[in-house]
Image (cartoon, rainbow over all chains, first blue to last red; front, side, top):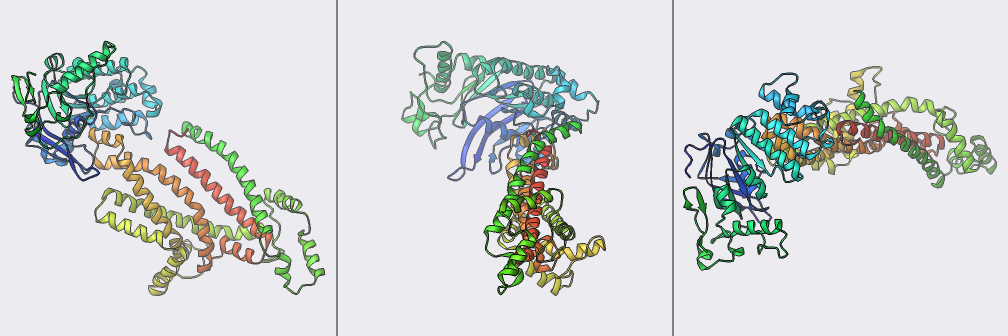
Length: 317
Length: 321
């Protein structure tokens, strides 16, 4: 990749998680780089390992999961050192926004308690600090929200509060794990705009994990497409989403377009999202163009252009 | 504070109405169970060789010749004002309320002592087991908990007497000193009975707290708290332990009835002049008014504990309002 001294640099990241029949590698061969202020979309269907990848970067995987990487550096620090390295970074330089804002708050504590705990950590002891940070994310009745328990607020409101808390910490990298999936379209757009505002204010990088292609196009500079635990295509958002090259990306975009256009015959992708297969292409079982080479040799990530990479033996089919 | 009180009072008051109903039904059950059970107070008091005339005189004297509904009303209506009649066998002629007033504080003291011991032990052992899950402190706490659950309280009682009373001479094995006479003496004399009652309870509390802590530690708000940079101790205290207390308190509240059941046996073993021991004596003597009153007091104790548990849970969990 062409970015000079990236903020985050990942080479050959793999995540092994415990499964019913022993540990299995859910994510493998992830190569990523993220510059300051940049937004990288991590696109893929459920089970493709995009959330695990995001959690691995923060060291927040469930217990039993193991992370390995050839390189895993954040601003020069080797994150492979685990908790001793990651714990001081979290909440200071690394932040996270989650898919389920309702579950993100302790149901037994008021919003004000959550805000104050974060602001104390940041050293902000102004009496109106919490209200200030809430108004920055467009919450008007700040006092009412601060006095409420999480179950008394909507998902969109809670997501704003979470963004306010993460924003107050001013991290350099935010992992946003499907932050709009549980919200309706209007609120989702507002939340995306808030994330962008946050980015404009602090110049932070965002790893935007999503399966929403429109949201990715709206927010991201670059996108990476994941299939079965590995990245199959990565490049500028405009190139990948408007002129996709990988059969999976093409299928995904054709399906979305056919849904949007209300085509009488839905363009569907065949097959089910599956596990990583040993040997061969990760998209093998679902690819219309698979041949013996795809079966025997896993394709490497090769450059189509200096900034657009593809993991496919047949880029021109 | 006002808000907390309102939150507490709404569902609790509604619940209180139910409690009164359950109490009345319970009183009916107690009354009926005694009369449906085997044995006759007159024959028990006068002996098998009593003449029909003396039996009839005894029955007439204590109102046992009246129809059941009349007997029930004659018992319950004064009982609502605290008058439980007089003992007819165990302490013939002495007001039941006086006997209970003498005995109840002993049971309440030992029971509360046991509950404090069990809860405190479980809080420490459960938290240690969950914090070091899968490591030796967890194995130790879990093994002890399995042992504690498997051991009946009367067996623990003899084990404690053998070791701590006769072996080391740390605590008396028999008798009771009221706290009004000497607080240290009371604590010393109640330690072994309280331990015997507390051991099985502490074991099951520990298992429940450990499971609740482990479940809570998997929740999303714990992950988010860590992502926000809160230190491990803060997350454990305010996110994991705080929320695991809700199921824990519920279970502790439900266990109070086993605690009261435990006192019946344990008071006999340790020679405590408590309500449990009194009730056993009264049951053997077919002393209807006394058994009824003791059972009713136990019932009220259980209902009060449930009510208190509900109130505590409503305070701990704002979603329950």
